[in-house]
Length: 221
Image (cartoon, rainbow, N blue to C red; front, side, top):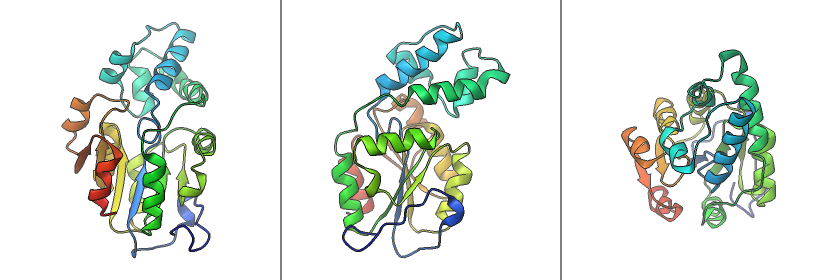
């Protein structure tokens, strides 16, 4: 619902969604996409790896090696299977440290809502971590849908996509692109996130952008 036209739908549970094919749906990944938080992610990863006596990573190695889901990422360092869930929780806690937004995020979201676009966040990090970032930057009211702790993005997106057309998912990793395409979404990959551009482009996103200003022409706002 556009700003000024009423109260937005604050959806935190997919089951509560109702069909609305009259307006586009634009969902965003959080970390590396809306947030300019590569440094935060590197610090969080190294903090967890240090606790578990694993080799640390530098900024460039992180971008070359990073993968989703997080269980696969930490398993690649030698974290034992029975510890993966706990390690993901540790990482999520570290990711609650303050971090800046990407340039242009707030203005873009306001413009999308002014044009009647349904907006949302769909993230693997915990709901509390998502909520904390959104509150810290004053973005909570700019989203109709807020879903954190998502273990299977393709499944979650496919459920959401049945309610809107057209539907876009904006992310910064190959996993985001693959999940979007599997769910029938138009995939938009943005450069400069947690994963190197070569890996992201290899996943063949519908659109590849360098900044959020390029998203406007894609969605026609």
